[in-house]
Amino acid sequence: VPIMKNKKKVNQVIKKVLLAAGNSKRFGKKNKLLEIINGKPIVNHILSTLLEIFDPSEIIIIVGHEQKIIRNLINNEDVKILENIDYKKGIGTSISLGAKQLETNVVGAMIIPADMPYIDPIDIINLEKKFLELNCEKVIIPKYNSKTGNPVILPRIYFNTLRKLKDDFGARSLIKKKDIIYLKTGIGTTLDIDTKDELAKAKLNFVI
Image 1: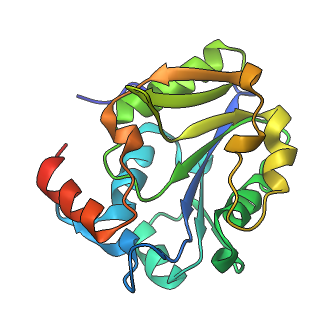
Image 2: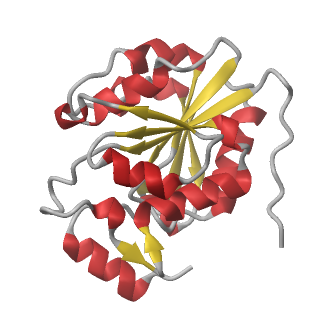
């Protein structure tokens, strides 16, 4: 069954910033994004989902650690790929780099960790749909049971905040509570893979 894409106005561009630059400190010597689940690398799971839903022009991928290998896996000329030379300093540098590419017609930024292979495409569609319903003015955060997850969508008012991020510091603590809307989603929005134990569990227990 083909996935129904959101009908957006011409001026409602929501960029998807896929964070694939980290050096997997907690995982060990190997790059976790290159580990295989269900026959393909972790990074390709979320990328395939995004390409299934969105036009490639909406996607920005931030690479860093083993960037040549990641680039070869992306294999899509229409996706913008940016190298973060400061990736060792932390996730904030990758978010900042992506945010600096947001053009004036962009109304929202969806920040997506690349280590989340089990995000349901329907959840991503619903997150963007909710963002559009709220006039692109609220921060949309997925929630499964009592646990918040990813991806998060932020409106234009937070772009400057994102551009100023540095080191291993994300944006959540800087978001005003009044701007946040939580959306009920499936378990995949809370399943990131940071350790080998989490990878083993994911391989055993979660198959889409």
